[in-house]
Length: 257
Image (tube, rainbow, N blue to C red; front, side, top):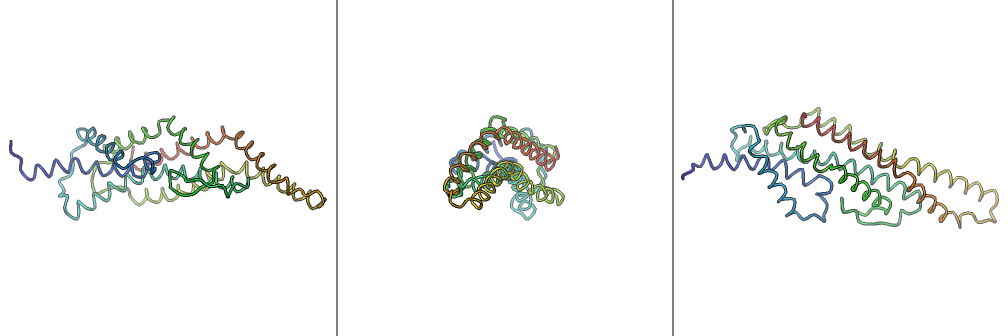
C-alpha cells in the first residue's frame, strides 16, 4: 500500500490540530497542571482523547501545516485550550486569595506551605481551602465536564484560523475581576468578625493598660478564627460551586456551546 506525501501530511494534520487544543487545556487546567502530575501523564491523556475525537471531527480546512496560515491556526488552537483551563484557574485563585486574607487576620500569615497548584508559598489556611475546593471539584466531576465541553467545542468552534474573538477576550478580562470579588465574598465574614474582636481588644487595652490584653489576644484570635473557618465551610462550598458554574458558563460562551 502506497501513500502519497499529501495523504501523509493530511493524516498527521488531523491528529496534530486537535492535539494542540487538548494538550494546551491539560497544561492550564486545575488538578492536571500541578507539579505532582508528570508531563508524561498529561501527554498520554492528550493523545488518548485526541485519538477518540479524531473520527468525530468535522472536515478540516485544507491548510498546509508549515505555512503562515498553519502557524496562526496552531496559535488559535493553543489559545482555546489554554483559555479553557485558565478560567478555572481563576476560580481556584479566588479561593487562595480568600485564604490569604483570613490567614493574615488570624495571625497565621507567617505559616506558609507550598501550593501544589502554583508552586508558590501560601498560608496554611489558603492551602486548606485549596484542598477542600479541589475535593469539591473532583466530586462534581469538574475535570470530566471540562473535557466534554472541549470535545463538544470541536463541532461548535471547529478547527480553523478563527478562534477566540475580541469580545471573548474582553469577557475573560472582565470576568477575571471575579477572582477578587469572589475572594472577598469568601473571606469577608471571617475578616469582619476578627476585626471586630481586635477592636474590642484595642478598646479594652486602652481602658485598662495593666490587664495586658494583647498577651492573650493572639490565642483568642487564633481559636476564634479556626472556629469561624469551620462554621463557614458550607457557605464557602456553595460560593465556590457558584463561581465554578459561572466559569463553565463562560467557557461554554467562548466555545459557542
